[in-house]
Amino acid sequence: MNLPKILATGLLIAVASVPVMAKPTVRVGTLTEISDKELWLKEAEIRGIGSHALITFNAGPKAQADLAGVKVGQEVRIVLENEPGQSASKLVSIRLCRPKEQECARIHSRKQTELARYLRENEVSQRKLAACTQAMDISLRKSFPDLPAPDAEKQPAIEQSHAINALQGQERLCVDDFMQRYQQAYFNACEQQHCGDGIGGGCYHIAGNWMHEGVLGHALRRCTSPASEAPRP
Image (cartoon, rainbow, N blue to C red):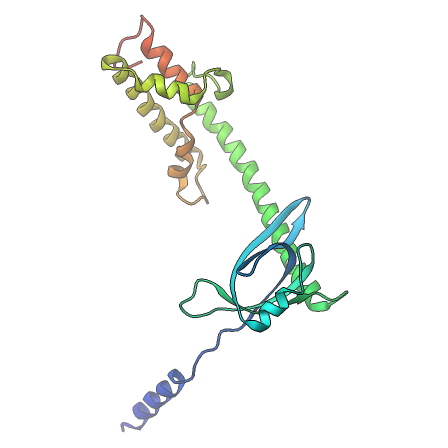
């Protein structure tokens, strides 16, 4: 009655005792920089936009000899292996791609396809973000109609920040109150328009862009003018 259990246990032990060998990784691209410890590889390029990889490695005598035979600007085929406990890969070999070599052409074509897909997705994402940001701006204008655009301010943000930091008393309370309310309104507008959907950190990430010259300049003018009444601008 215990036989199936014994067989199952024996099978697990047998499987666990077989070492798992990592499959070597083959990469293809044009060398843009190279040293005895690392190299930059341009694996694809579309309309002047390149996909570059920084590869750090440990090279044995054979691989070191291979390195001496290649130079920047050449298309190469690289074989790498992961080394347990090492941050750098083991460079097994590196050589030039031969003219019309099918393997190099196949790997290069795959990387071109991956880059093309990334560029398409990024273009769509940027268009959506631009439309979403415009919708956010319209929403914010309802609560802050007098707020100027960032490029309408002549005073650099660093100078504005210094001016704000020099404020004291009611004027500083006024500025802090305005900025807190604007930041919250910015976050709420992002949530309402779903501008953070699909982005790591969501609207918490988007809200990191809320402070610009227009916000700082507006807060300074509203809170330091003779007619201002702190703490609410």
